[in-house]
Image (tube, rainbow, N blue to C red; front, side, top):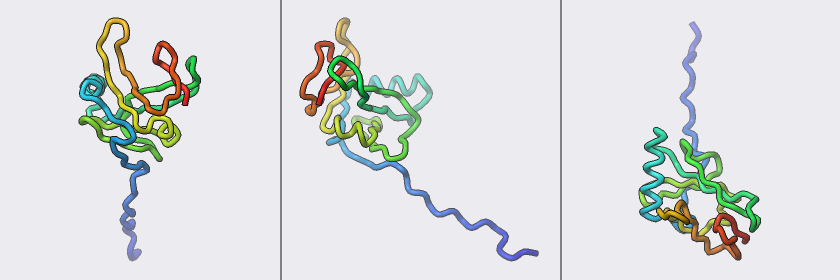
Length: 130
């Protein structure tokens, strides 16, 4: 018989994300209700909203939002208005201090980002420059 053949207990793994607060990004009650409803509809009750900044749009940068199962390695995780938002480190440089709102309107409805870092934005409000 071999002594100590049992596998040693695995060391606890630290999460690969960092917890941040609403100074990074804040979510309004309207946006939280919409995101929560979308997560429920997709069967992701414990999911997160990913907010990212990518190149593109008529002003050079644009927002990308996506629903995901959880944070990825190196993400910042913010809990705001009862939902969880994740932001990658590069996007965090552009969205720090932003507020995410949801507006129900016939002509200009949808998610809106109020970003204090945006130097200019296009007339449609979908892109910005920093």
